[in-house]
Length: 341
Image 1 (cartoon, rainbow, N blue to C red):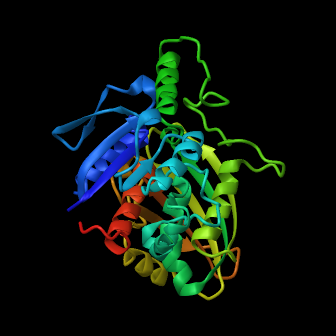
Image 2 (image 1 turned 45 degrees about the horizontal axis):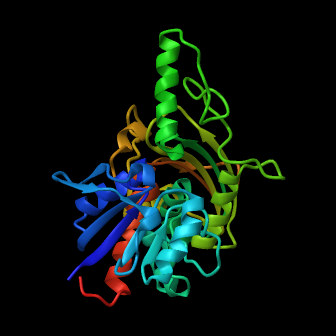
């Protein structure tokens, strides 16, 4: 006997990826329901290679009898409907930022803190971290276990798909406009994204950081260790899919490059591709469509005691969002829900 699963925001980039991931990983679902806004109701979305689902209206959907709902429709939708789903006995796994820092809601990356899923019962809600956080903590966890990370400095190079389908459309439209000498318009981003980089993701905060940078700091502390100090600079780049990060860490104990490489290579979901030669590293273009987090260019940081540097890339629509949510659901059904799969 399997589970009834709903995907909220099924017509969006991450929602579609959630449906694909559920099918690819053969999630034990007896029924999958695609939910979106009223304007999308009646349209069809793919589920696996051969099946299609007719989208239903989220506003009128009854969550009673639904076991798990994967939410990827934005914070305001999650704020309204995730508690409704939870009250109906459905476990909501939310991809928005709305519940992440709620002390009664576990924030989970299964390779890093799967045990936190056990706390889902307080609100029947589990939060998925920010896409840039998810890949970072997978890379940090084995190093933290070995040598206790004290400080992290990270610069991100985040693709436009982090802003949804509209962000991808804007990059495409602007690029085409430049080539044919048409006017370039900005609607999704604050400045031109084509052939440019923008050091601004989400809203500015009082201290000069952006909310995206605050999310990384706060979420790493909640998922991995509140004692870790982290500072981030988050940058949007003209790449369609795949986030990259340049990561500088300082550890309590000494850690050699070889020990770091071995620990990361042995960690679930992490792949080290680190050859000091042309093409001996992974880029966002190569990780698109892949589940793993890739690490390259591991080396010593000579400017601090016990310092290491590495490059980290991952498909933000998969490990940064859809895959992580499905992995949370897999952990939930394996260890916590009573219904037999």
